[in-house]
Length: 332
Image 1 (cartoon, helix red, strand yellow):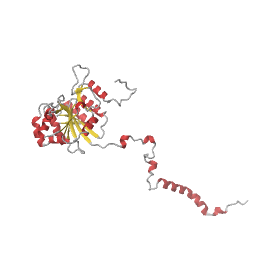
Image 2 (cartoon, rainbow, N blue to C red):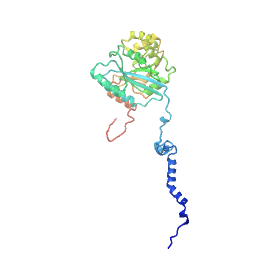
Image 3 (cartoon, rainbow, N blue to C red):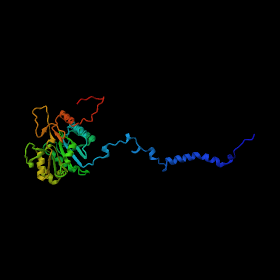
Image 4 (cartoon, rainbow, N blue to C red):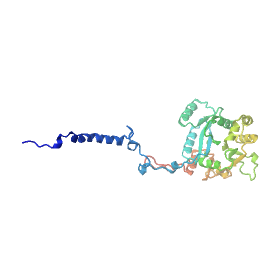
């Protein structure tokens, strides 16, 4: 029997479209994936963008949305000695756990004279590698023989190329705890800030009408505007100041300013800067320079023991970030 066949089977143009279908599909896929040559569509392989990511991956904190511009920069030198490793470690912790001041930067550096002992040289070098927050002056370690002068005269030269520059430079003892936000707010609020400023705790503090010519800022913590430090570092300033470097350095510092007609804008913080009051010692009484811890503190001095440091840091909520865990149990 003769096999029937379609009349279209003999036509070559009928089978051609069927054969082209796979190639057409490949071409379509190519143009979808590679509209710009061999560069893949960013939406296919690029990381998830803000307008396409789930809400849990695009959460932005308010601080990141509107970070205040920095309008205040302070260099605070903590005068100490090379062997005071524990105190430096404590201060690093205390300052690291403080909330950063709004719109301000306060850089803390530990300051001492030439390192002369072998063990100190090695251990201080390790600190510098780890923290880079130490300033070694070219002087012999001392308390009342010119260390303050060496610091203030060296700083403007050492940081002359800093951009943006510091607005203020201050010194503090290593038993003083500054609250950086309070310090920044106090400096920012002054009417003649950044010019001829001398800020700290005025002494004497117990006189009703003290003569401002003979008042000075106590040496455990004060700040001057950068122009004052630059004058001390200048040739006229060094010449005037260097002859009066022995003895009580806070009084000597005020004498330098009087000689040069500097630091005329004096701002004392009154009861916001004070000595720590140990309530367990009956011979310690309240005074104009010593009282209990208060919330609006700028600086506390005479933190001579670990216990006093611990109580001070707890009062100012330094342990706020402490979280319970099965790994430890602490009561405070």
